[in-house]
Image (cartoon, rainbow, N blue to C red; front, side, top):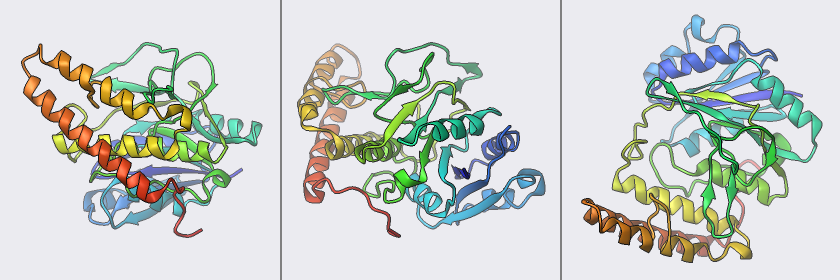
Length: 318
């Protein structure tokens, strides 16, 4: 079994060096390491010419001419030649047994299309601990329950995987690509959810195994979707991407998701209940403005999905 590790990167040289160092220390060597960089990212490209950074790794550098993670990931998937494509972020560091565990999982189950695991979050100099019983699931309401950084104990079948730590069988993604309709100039939030749901919609199994872990040091995002304080544009992009993805893939049992998000929602994708609660706080005007914005983008996503009529994302090279 040939395993390709795919690492998209942009202006994160120090993080990338740590990631590549971790890949160099794998107990089961990587057969191929595809690093996708932006063609205008001179610092990263210079870093990838340094022997101390790339020595000992079968690196293939691929250039993306377009901004955004979706384009980078699609370039990487197209360039990868492995039977399994293991994707991680440049700000992650897989432990030495990562590739070994991935190979074992895909070798043991021919119906396994995608494999994810825990990303141990390192924030503000500390490790985020804790456990949650539900990981990577979508409720009948349409609510997405991530918690991939808090899953523990046993492997289980899931609905979605997280981009910092997800691997796919080549046969499962041969005709699937990351969705270019997703909005944003950088992270393009929910692209990992959209991709993994496409794999599951194609009737492949998705497994989350907390033992297939990476250490994750979330880097600052260099676009409108900042982790700590996303702009209104970032909030709207995320709402559009979320609703478009859910409408593309959810079954009829989930069709109440629009009502749930409109009435209840989440702290980010606000519903009426959250807006009413915000009236008790000092930032109520901002919350109301955000509510109006995300509702508008939810409607735009519905129109976009209707035009597309739920067709799967196909490879341009298929």
